[in-house]
Image (cartoon, one colour):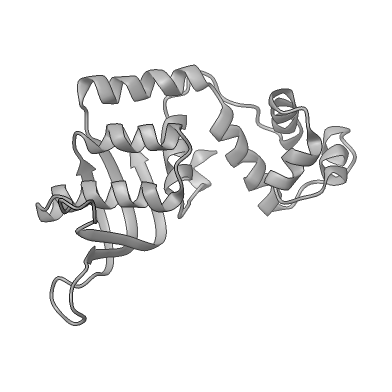
Length: 191
C-alpha cells in the first residue's frame, strides 16, 4: 500500500515514514477509509474540500453505490488516512528520535546546493541523494510538522540538516539557509 506512494511534499513524506511504525494496518477499501475519516471529521463538506471532490461523491462511496473513485481521489483518501492513523504510535516514534537523538534518513531527487553565482561548482543542481540528518535537525523537523509548519519551513530545516551532513556547513548566523532544497521530484524519510 505504501510502496506506491511517492510525494514531493516534506509533510506527506514524514506521514508516510510514520506509517512504517504502525502496529495495525488502516482500512483497505476506499469506503472503509472514508468511514474512518468521517468518524474523525463529521463535516462531509470540509472533508470533500480537503480531498478536492464533492460531498455527493463521498456520499456515493459511503453508501456503496457502484461508483468507484478515480485513482486521484483514492490516493487523496489514502494520504488523509495516513495523516490521521494511530497518532499515539506516531508520537511514541517521534519521542524515540528526539529523546535518543537518532538520525533521520532522507532520500530525494531535487535541486539542491548552495546559493552561489551561476556556473560555479557550488551552484545548485539536480541531485539524487540518500543522506542522514543528524541531531538537532530531526527534532526540529518533527516539531515543525507537529505544529503545522508550512512546506517552505520544513524544506528549510531539511536543507539545513542535509547541508550540514553532506557539505559540512551550518546555517548562517543570521538565520538564512546556506543551501537550498527546491524543485523536489520525490522525497522520502526513514527512521
